[in-house]
Length: 288
Image (cartoon, rainbow, N blue to C red; front, side):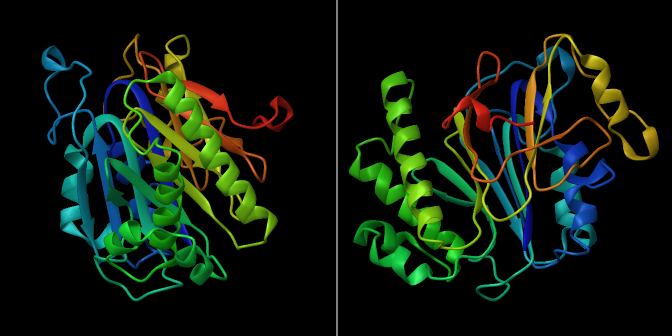
C-alpha cells in the first residue's frame, strides 16, 4: 500500500497544499505510509518565484527523495514548502516488495518519464520476462513497481513512442500502447496497479485494485480552492483567475468535490495551454 498524488496545471503552481497543508496531505498520510517519500516537479523553478515573475515554461524534472516518514522529515517539509511547477508526481510508500531504500522509493525516472505506483503485483517476474534488456539494465531497485515501469517503457520503445514530444499522433499512439498494456495486465489478474506516468506534457492515470480520485479546478470556479486548507483555512497561495488544474490522488485530500474514478479507468491529462482530460476507454467509464 502507498499513496500518490498528481497535478497537471495551466500555470506554475505551488504544491505545498497537497504535500503538507491539506487535511490528508502526503505528510499526514505518511503516518500510515512511512517507508519513504518522493516528489517530482516539472515546469518551474525549485523555489517559488514572486507573482510578477511567474510564467509557465518547460523544464526538466526535479526529483527529491528520502527514506524517512515524510511528515517527520525536515528535508521533505522543506521541499514541500518550496516546490512549484506545472506538473507534480509525488508518493509516500508503505513497502510490500523490496526494503526501504532510495532505490525502491518512488517516483522513478527514465528517458524523461516519471512513474509512481500504488498496489502490489503478484508476479512481477513475468513483467521482467517481457521487458527489454535495455530497460532491465536501468532498474536500480527490486520493487514490482519499477519492474512495471520498465515493462511500460519497453512497450513504448517497441511502438517507437518513448519520446513523443509535441507530436499529437505519437501521443495518441502512446495512449493506445499504455491502454493495451494495462488491459493485458488486468485480464491476467496481475495484481493491483494504480499508476501515474508522465513526460511533463501529459500524465497517464490508471486505476485498478486501489482507490483513486480526481478533482478539477477551473478558472470559472476559483472559490473551490478556498475550502481546501486545513480546518477550513485557505490554501497558502491564491487561485489566480487563469489557473486551471487537474488533481489525482489515492484518496480525497481536501473537503472539495473529488470524484472517484471507476475501476479499470485509464485516462490521459494533457497539460496545456489548459489541462485536458482524455478518456482512453468508453465515455461511460468517465468519473461519476
